[in-house]
Length: 376
Image (tube, rainbow, N blue to C red; front, side):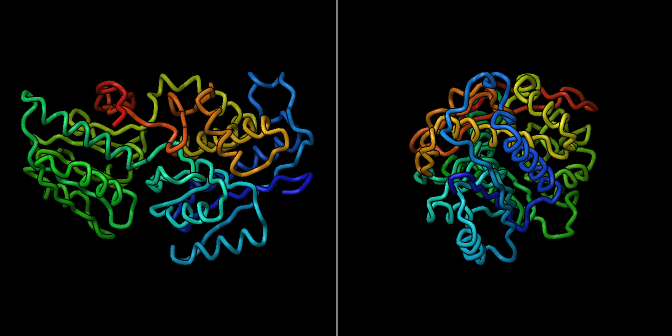
């Protein structure tokens, strides 16, 4: 940070999805360009009449820190990046299966890490500098566990004695499956896992699920589309919505009456107004929509940072930035995919719940809630 420039980094891990990477960087680069073109250029209209509180308007500069190699080497890479170019905060970012080395680096170096796009955040409410929109697949695991446990308490729903989980080795679903196993521990449910090896057919794995009371699928769209025509008989099916593609999860038609998606965001019709501004902003700047949630979350992270900095009156201290975000977040009107965002000391995940949803028709994309908003 200088008297005229605020430096920010965004971090991308080697296993990050390349399509999401391009979408995220498109949003960041355009947002920074807008911000530098005009102090109010990237600010939503509802605040555009308010004067900026900066004593001096500083230019924002973005540094893309791309990591390479195994996770054990990331910490040293990040230290080198930070030494070469100190930054005020890490903004957004994109990870795959393992974000822990980045989280730990930011905590050790006292660098705020603001709302990265990760399916498996680090589960540590005691940490201070890393803020996430949600717990990702870990939240989904808690939601599915709650539904299974509640079902066991309902005598009319049938007794759940066995659960089978299917996921790809090395993908985010492995962490989701582990979290669900922990959440169900002590509830009298025998849990078995099938870790798909590279190249292994998901349809063959489905045959191993025959006879289980519950089937939990931590799978990507290509695997979901290849599951086969029929779900196992008399089996309750739960699917990770984050991994499957949320509204675009390609569930085969015969699975739609049985399967329930864990959906840790607001329903499409409820969030539409909150995301319309972002998508309009993308359209004006001709930003291709390649991943709606990642790009909307990235835009939301940028807006939260801009709004918070506008209240800091040149007091550019990292700890103060985090504290201001904690204080201001619950008053935010435009919350994107999430119905409500709140943070406080000991809370690092801003959205705390989600819905279990199902597809309304065998051949459509309309989702309906299967119950109320769940906060596990």
